[in-house]
Image (tube, rainbow, N blue to C red; front, side):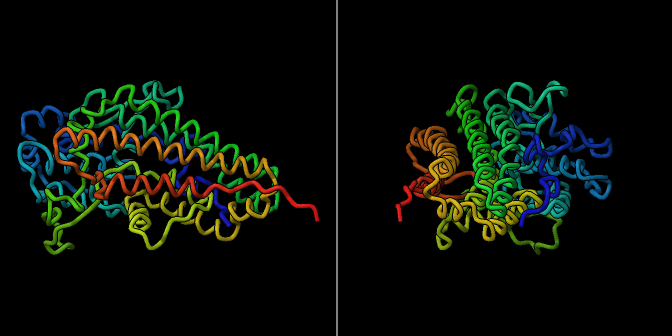
Length: 397
């Protein structure tokens, strides 16, 4: 049974998967060489000087990072420098110099994630509050780091950060829902599922604001190209080589790029509500693989939810009480919320990626995470809507 509190998994009751302490905005002075480059990244990208600057960096000692906030800040900074080095400027390269590769490997190992820009660094640890006395909302958060900068790039990520903050009540409701099943408390389960459904509706409302300040053409041509990873990418057929990382014996590494699918929110709801995907399908393997890019404790939370769902299945409980119209309706409302979220994401993928690619006359169906984008997203949408439970009136004996 999931008897742990959210805190045990680094999940906050008001911030969800966002860190309970605001992310660090700058590393100690010893790391100024990194910070100075990342602070002027947009200008260096314009001048095509990023590679020159990074090549002249000294190799810094990551043992001087004192705590988790500093390690996460270092991961963020090195991720931006690493991706700017690989993808930025006139030429794409497949080898990272030791001054970036070695410390990136070390901090990534400490965090239990690969040394590549992942959602955790791109979004979860990449913000600050405009007014520290007010909540985390779209109107009160600022991005710490970006590549080219500008309204569209920032808004794209701020949307995700605001969604993360909004998810907190729904994550709390997962714990309540399992307790309700354990106690056979139908009324408590209805309350918990209602909270989940309302949380999902609010998340959808935030996602729906993406087009307000993020233009599809600008996203595709100025934002997306720098967040790709080095898995299944034709530009990097041998992956990326990390100089100075002897542990990899000179082998090219293939890691997925940043994608919102590395967020832990929807996988947590999927697991709690008992949504099943074909274990033999490439989609299922992909979903499991994405967890390696999540913060370790967030990944453990999803696994614990799956483990608890086998003992106290919410979905099976609904089937056993299929004659309870209110219970069936509110469960299906949760699925409607997940469906609406995924369907909106699917339509954004069409508008922000496929239609932009079509303008260039070379249709591509690969996401930043290195997957057949449209196929996987469409399957996700269909799987959810087919999982709804039908209300059945109890027959008189």
